[in-house]
Each structure stands twice: as structure tokens, then as C-alpha cells.
Length: 404
Image 1 (cartoon, helix red, strand yellow):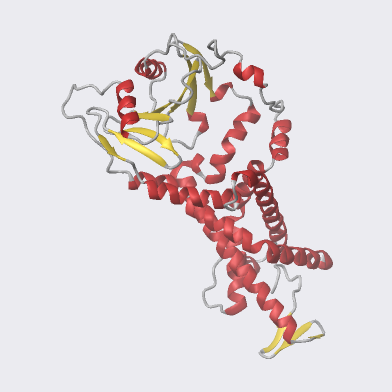
Image 2 (cartoon, rainbow, N blue to C red):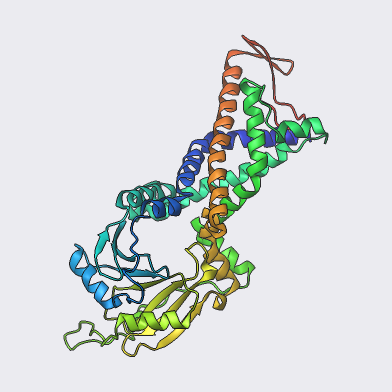
């Protein structure tokens, strides 16, 4: 057992020394993104307009789309309508570009928190792909997944080293309760074990979901474990066979019904909705998928996709979360569990605090590694003791928790 603990300690120390900086970077960017939705909502809290008087209806959605198209530099790609009567109509114009309109008067309220959205988008790019261009996203995701798995290895080995050989309160207290009178490496050791103990469970959840998001084989394992057939991409012919064409070879636009009619049908079919997003791109498509959210995002089980026929306005099908296989349900939750959004504000807070604590965990681990390296360089070993200028420094021994 002594040799096993020494070997595990060396592997834990080596892995942390090599991957620590990247893990610190991922944890830091993740903590910044934890409360992204709340920050943007707070910044855009002023874009609200109550109806001028009771009984005045909102403008038709088609009229609002025409106003947004004429007011914006680029045609909107989608429009989101919320059930809150004072909420504006939100048009998405492109990457981090929004346009808010008063649903009753059609007045342009503003572009939203463009700088804040751009900042979070840049941080997201750094967290997911290290800021690499699109053509290198696959490689960047694989590299990130490798460091993610290295963190999982450190969690497992750290838990093994944390468990004391002799279970008593004195040994447990040193790894579970902060000891404020400690200084130097003893303080770092206490903080490292303390943080590692309290964030082990949420950090493991973040790491496992991150692995599924990073690697296709992890998703395939999830599907195999739940008996879900692996996804197959639709053939090109299947994606275009329902699209009518003009004689010159270009797609022929279908005679579409009013967007307001589609919106009214969705509202009546799904009472209790919080927001409805209507895509405005690809006007030649014979169908239109409308996305209905019964919360404020973060819960795929509270979202529904409703597909309409553009020529008749009839509902073609409803893709509810319950209609998905177990594997696809779990896979759709992975991103929201990873970010904490699945648990609302409480879940995002846990994810954010776990990421911040991981930064301290890396910092204390690297600090102990540097102290150990310096001590090994300035002093020779004598009977299992490092003799430094300050005095003897104990070498790591299997005393119940890994020593420094």
C-alpha cells in the first residue's frame, strides 16, 4: 500500500504539473460564463415598453418583421416573442447583434447589450476552442477533451490520496475544515485538500459532461449504454427532395401564410409558453420549425419544436422532448448540466463557484509542486529527509493524505 500511494502521488503530481495551466485557463473562462444569461438580462433590462392603454393589441408579427428589416443593416435571421406583455420583440441579426422593437408601436428600442454579448462570445470561443478559427475547432475540441480527461484522472487519484489510512477525526479535519493559522506549504496543503473534498462531486459532473461534449466516442458510449441507435446524417437528396424548383433551376418560393397566423396557432396549441422563436431564413423551404420554450432556457425537457406547413399554416408534426430516445434526451442535457443551466440560478451558481474553486485548487497544487521542486534542488536526501537551508523538510509519506 505504501508503494502504491507513492506511485499514485507521483502520477497525480506529474499530471497536475503538466496540465495545471490549461486546467486553470478552462476553469477561469468557465467561471466567467457561469452567470452569462443573468448579466445580459440585467444589461438589457431597460428594453421594455408596457402597452399604452388596456385593450390595445400588439402589431402583427409580419408588420414587425417588415419594420426590423427596413431598420437593420442586415435582414433578421429569427424573431423571438415572449409571453410577458411588456417584453420587446427580439430580432436576431447575426452574431451578437440584436434589435428590439416595441410590439405595440413598432418603435425601435435599441440593439441590446452588443458589447456584453461580444465579450461573452469571445470568452466562449476561448473556453471551447482556445480561440482557434472554425477550421481548427475539431482539433481544439479534442485537445480540450484530453485536458478534461486528465482532470478526471486527477480527481480519482486525488480522492485516493485524500482518504486517510487511519480514519480518525484529526486526519479528517485536516482535509475537510479550513485551518486559518497555517502558513506556507502547510496552508497550501490544507486549502488543496479542503477544496478538492468539497468540489469533488460537482467537478466530476462538469468533467464527465465536458468529455461527452468533446468526443464523439463518448456520445456513442452514452447511446450504447442506453440502447439508442447511433445517429446517421441525412443524405443530401433527402434534405432537398421536398423543395420545389423553378424552371431556371433555382428554388421556387412557396406561397407562405402570414407569420402571425403561425404564431397564433403555436400559442393556442401550447398554453403556458414563455417564449416562441420563429426563424426567418430560407423562405423557400416548404416547412417552418417554430421553437417554443416554457422556461427561460436551460431545460431541453421544457422546450418543444413545432413544424408548420408554410403554404397552409397547418401543423405538420410536434417534436417534443418526450418523443426522443433516452440516449438523445441525456445527450441534449449534457451542455446544460455542464454549464449548470439545467439547475437554474442555483445550478449556475454551483458551476461558477466550482470553476472558481478549481482555479484555487490548481494554484495551491502548483505552489506545492514548485516548493517541492525547489527543496529537491537545494538540499540532498538523508534518510528520507530533505535538508534545506530552512531546516529539514519531510519527504512525502503515506500518512493518510498525500504530504508535500
